[in-house]
Image (cartoon, rainbow, N blue to C red; front, side, top):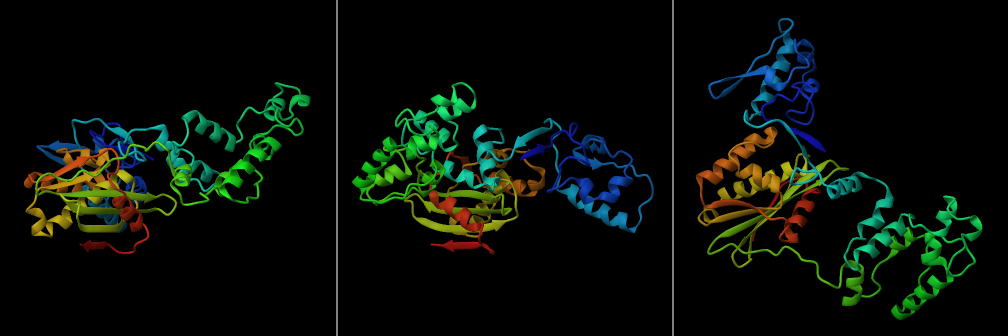
Length: 385
């Protein structure tokens, strides 16, 4: 989840840190690692600048043998994909967030995606904005059984066990599940609503099960709002058409950590919102920022294959601030996809009609759906409409 972004190379270990690919070079070239006279050297200690060209300089403990030569050829191929910026210090980026910066929300979402526990399921549908935030927090604490009920206070020794009875019915111990489901007072309240909706419901053992079982009993607008959202519409990003006779690509990427799969998707539309082209493709597993770069790259490649598209002003819109920054900068970005970034930069600089922009939220659900569908595809899908 934390990846090293190499600049000058002074704070990055050549053999031990993740420099290129999906594992350190000492794992890819173990024989050369043992032969190298500086196994703990930094990246900058193995290179020197000759004019504007980066040259590698290694010192070995003995002459190469045949198997060493094979690894040396592999190492040279890997290093050909690496480019450095001597003016930028080494830094870390937080890969689960598209900006590269750590946020508590992105950490929580990553934890939820990688967890196989069923306890995450009820939380997923909680934060809908249907009620004030303090009520959502109350429900969250209730599901997790973290409310300061009398049973919990008695367990902590704050009140005597004799005072742990329910404040409503005074018969049973006051736990979260009893207070909100099984207490006679709560039961009558639930029964009243079930009668209004014309439903029969076998009350579950706990709030967690109740939250999982919940689904709208009818298809009316009221029940859709109760189940899926707020009575006050949440502001959404609206797709904005390109100006004049221009065309716009919306691209997105998806990553499934448990399946170790990545995919990209995109849709091309004209100024009237008419769909012109769709694509949905599986790609090698990679973190979401790199996948967004692949999506931009695919949109440009498809556009260049059609002269009719390139005759218009072309906008490529992504919701990854990191990907857009890498593609629009003259240098920088992850070194393992530098050849793709160079292609994108050269394409946009050679053709001034191509513009790559960022929008903070996805402008439509189509690209998100196409990217997620790509996770289950075996081959690329492209459709001209």
